[in-house]
Amino acid sequence: MDCAGTHLIADLWGCRGLDDVSLVEAALREAASAAGATLLQLHVHGFGEGAGVTGVALLAESHVTVHTWPEHGYAACDIFLCGRLCAAEPALEALADRLSAARREVQLIPRGHPAPAGPRRVPSPA
Image (cartoon, rainbow, N blue to C red; front, side, top):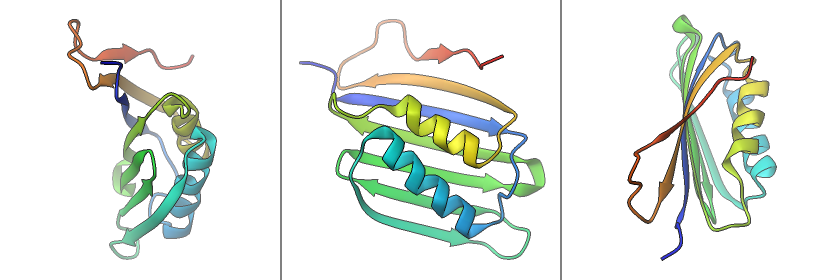
């Protein structure tokens, strides 16, 4: 069986605007587009002024989620894309750019078959 897809999990640090529902919504839309994915639905929930935001983009190819902690400048991102026509890395670039991330920690996990070496860590850009 070929790999069912790629699951990218990222911690973004030094982010700005993490309490802004409109910003997180725009970041999710841009991530879906950058991945080459088909956006089916988008739901974003803000937890109040100065508090975090949770957003999910439901894609025909799976999903992109963002959970933010503005008090820490931190966003947790989850990008799972099935098939060969979509790419998780451009989606992450769109999220990191829109959220002004200063640093990122990333894991790429092939889904659909066992990975003998486990998750592959991707170095942060310099």
